Image (cartoon, rainbow, N blue to C red):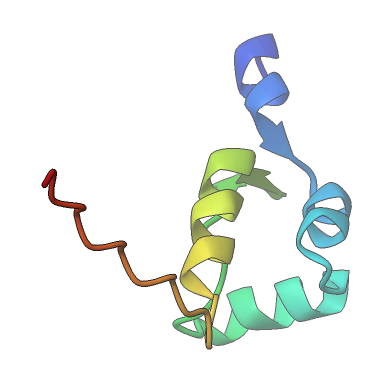
Length: 77
C-alpha cells in the first residue's frame, strides 16, 4: 500500500478504537450490509477506514442533539 493511502487510512483495530465500537461489530456490520455501517475500503483481503469517512459517519449518528436557537437581531434604536 502506498504511503499516501496508509497515512489517510486506519486499520480495523484503529477504527474500532476511534469510533468506540468493537472490531467484531465492525466486521458483523460489514458482513450484513447494514445501512449504518461506517464506510470502508476493501483492498484485497485488507479492510481500511478513512478518518474523514469515520468523522462524517459519526456526525450522522448523532441523535437528540438540539442546536441553540439563533439569537434575534438587535435593532439599533
